[in-house]
Image 1 (cartoon, rainbow, N blue to C red):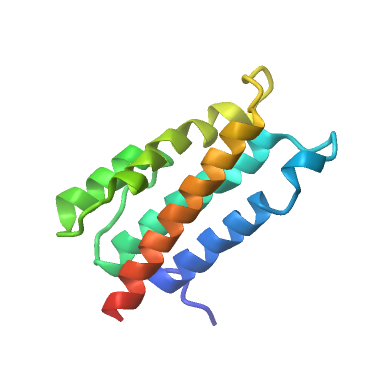
Image 2: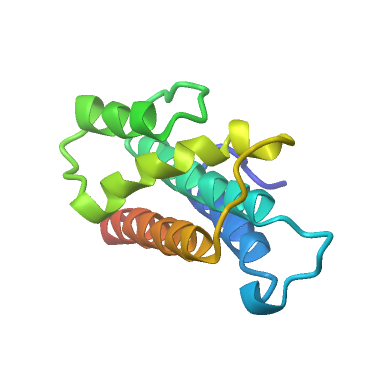
Length: 134
């Protein structure tokens, strides 16, 4: 049985979201696939990566999709420093809710790539913290 509340499991879930978001070639995207839906996966990657750090540090995290709130929880409850590149993840919060519905602004290829890069940065940051202390 898998313990779903370990930081390692949270990181696996984050990696899964990253892979799902990265599945398609952005230059040859099927018309049935929306970049905003793929960006949701990157938001989820960042969110779950941060939650992995909180779980690792024994912090009960807020059940929220708000990246800023989660990063503040890291700052308020741990001694971990958050690099500027990781703080950019707050830009992904908009993909958690609003972008999943019709009538949202169309996401550009550049915005997609930026979201992908931010998600990867946050994942690698969280993974490094958890592996370093293990």
